[in-house]
Amino acid sequence: MTHRVAVIAGDGIGPEVTAAALDVVRAAGVDVDVVRFDLGADRYLRDGHVLDDDDLERLRACDAILKGPLGPPVGDTRVPPGTIERGIILRLRFAFDQYVNLRPFEGAGVEFVVVRENTEGSYAGEGGFLRKGTPHEVATQGSVNTRFGVERCVRYAFDLAMTRERRHLTLVHKTNVLTFAGDLWQRTFDEVAGAYPDVTTAYHHVDAACIYLVEDPGRYDVIVTDNLFGDILTDLAGAVTGGVGFAGTGNLNPDRTAPSMFEPVHGSAHDVAGTEQVNPSSQILSAVMMLEFLGEAEAAARIRKALDHVRATNPTPSTIGALVAERL
Ligand code: IPM
Ligand code: MN
Image 1 (cartoon, rainbow, N blue to C red):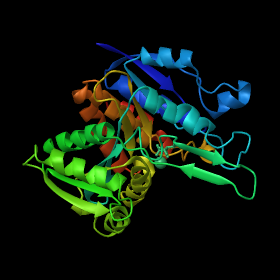
Image 2: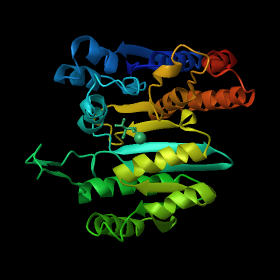
Image 3: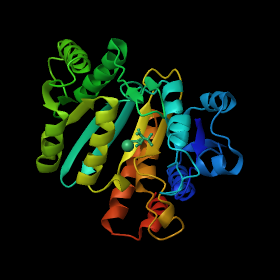
């Protein structure tokens, strides 16, 4: 079966790491029909284009999206903050209802997965300015939490926990201070838990979870949390388990009403583009998650195994893609 994969190669090291990931996918014998989309900071600087309805419709026609890192070099002020983030990345997550941001971590002797709510919370874009630019200026940025949005994410996390050996799920929030949003999350979590008697549960405040992640990450199996806590926690989790260079992400639409999107956790790292330091591991792992989502579990498992083997040989980072492809 041929999968129609939209590829947004991205900025900085993006083209190199997405090319490596596609080579690996093909070397594993998976048939992909690649549809390329020229989107990101480079494109914006060239002609001002960010992402329009036509792009969205063409992306929607694909089975999945493999996205490289997007963004200008650090300190480049020609791209206003939010242009790429809100204009492309979040727009895609929201438009395609990719309500689960799935981030598995493995390294330093631990293995756990974070289920981050991906369409709501403080990412929703609620808020605005009053009296902007005056001494009495006001900025608000609310966190939007719907029962529907929280429940579908929490259910996904319980279902995922059921597929794992330890069957343990931790809710991370800040219920002691965010008493409205936290209450909705906690009540939803507790209610859904009733349908999963085989899953053991825990609750941690997000600040405490930061300590546990550093001091005792082995206590985690599956974590479920809101959008912003999940953003922060997963960078920390990446750092603790060997660096965000070794973590992949699935922005999943579990209902499959639109394509899901797979991207590395790291950024575009313009400073190392074209050098031996370009490490495609995170992009390859994202492609592996894509294959798993597309029903190519066998090929995905073979790639994982080959990547583990190659990593253990301590290769020059930029050669990892070719070495993995060769092994397959
Ligand atoms: C991530 C990134 C994004 C986020 C940005 C680039 C919008 O940090 O995928 O974690 O905040 O979700
Ligand atoms: Mn992030």
